[in-house]
Image 1 (cartoon, rainbow, N blue to C red):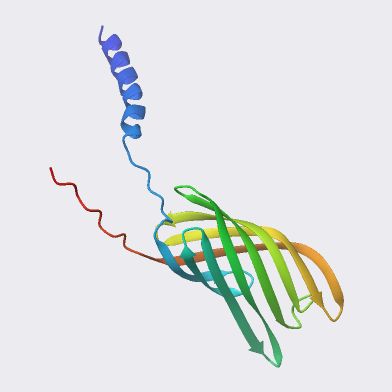
Image 2 (image 1 turned 135 degrees about the horizontal axis):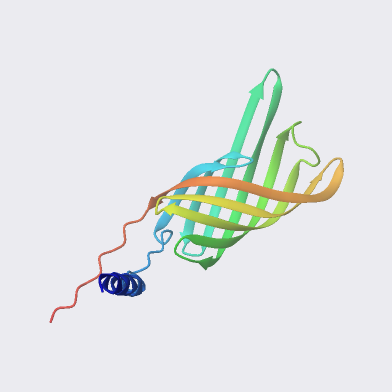
Length: 168
């Protein structure tokens, strides 16, 4: 008899878990982001600014000089958000890069078309991965190569305006 009560209690408890989860509101962690600063490979220093909910611009730069050897890059990006879920955002990227120094193989610049995804860890912290194709050009000719970049951004989050409450 006791075994039956325990079994029924476990079954009722398992059935109640999905019912309680349905009442929880979902939260889009990326919805109030404005300016983000962080690291974005390969250019290291990154500033990303969401001008609108689905459109952002990004600037990346890095230069180092050691022992007469200078290397670095500067990049500008346009980002268009295609899908926005609670934790993941998916977007497309149009990117222009300028390569500085002898470190870079191939051309002195490139234009890249990439797809990207951003995982929101907190409303103010996200990790992103971008991948696509870069078309490089320079004195040695032109060509294409895979383009991949990984980044981490800390975002300044805009406080939403308070919603007016209805009076009875």
